[in-house]
Image (cartoon, rainbow, N blue to C red; front, side, top):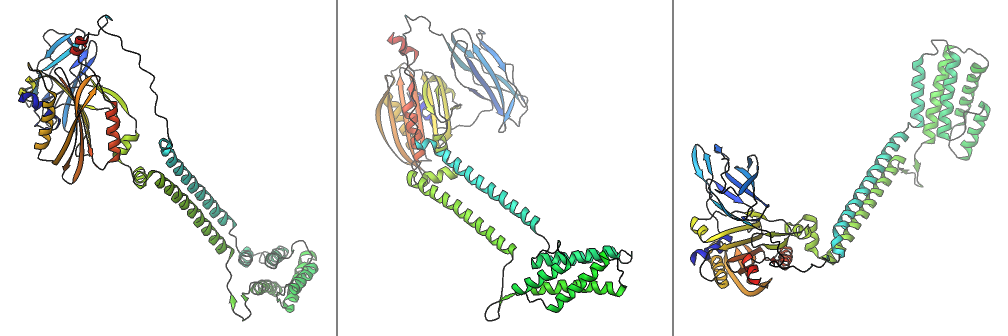
Length: 532
């Protein structure tokens, strides 16, 4: 009986790994189904895997022999096996050469079952109803809200970048020289052309008067290019008087004389002396500078103090800055409003976990899978497909059972652990469900890594198979954890499901409840024969 009770302890036990480990995904198949048979050992050794030796009756066949793989400092050799004749077949231990020494793996019993086709012996099952998914709620579309917020913010940022870049380009394109800077640059360019030395006096006066006319037109804001000299002087005098520019009458007379001299050169083919040309050049520059100093003199208040005015560039920069601040404030306000609405509806913890991420929350809200595990099968729905877990059994333990298959996900250290186990036990005595429950509780109480284990048990039933539920809590260091373990017994088969999670993890609780509701047990073949 101690051998039988020891099997339950395999849920929580660990052992030293052997040189060669054997792992299979199942030991019970129907005709034509496949088994994944795997040998593994340490990768730092010189290893030669054998040609697989199968059962003596040659009823088990090799479908594929996969290449050796390396993962986490171990070498793995996998074989895909199948069988087409029902029965129980023993695959002997395999001889693996490691560092020129022989190591024998464990032997394995494979059960190949038939497929019932006689409806007089195999009853028909009722048609299952159409599965109706639970109606969707606003909660199911929450992820779309966060995507929408992200897309809106991204679009806003992109629009701001494009507009800001466009404004910069426009400002650079519109950034031109001031009228005085443009006139000074043109005068320097005129001097560099050396038109006087080339006796191109007419061309020189044409360009010189155009520089003066252009400057006056831009800075005094009167038409100067399509008017005669007399009309220009008249317009300048009127504008000077009406706008109180303060241009001296003497300077206007000098401008008048300068333009008349230029007209004589341009239209009457006059040829002024060199000193007159230089004097006209200087007069043009003086007129431009004086008008500039008068037109752009600083404004003063009633007390004579200078009123500082901002340039158009400065005003535009402030306007752009204000627009950016308003845009950022609007985006921040939108985020705050959405956050407040989400927190008020879902709670702060849920919103925080949605933004920062939470492992069990992602499991709960991700895709779920319904699968069956072991033989007789345990079917359940879980957020991940469980992987086969091969535990190293002692020879004494192996003799106490026909088969044992375990599937699991996670670990106790990660805060969430799910494991499914099925055992077929060899025993001439009638097995008692309470023995397995007491043994499981005893193993928890004797585990030195946990403390304060408190539990309750209650009866349960699944597919007319009786069982027990162990609901407990315990401490693992500073963490508080909860245990829910289902133990079912039918004839000589024990089926178990255990879920361990942190006490304060509401998402893990929801996962556990959903898994528990989905558990569906398969009856053993002997039970089916008894019913028939």
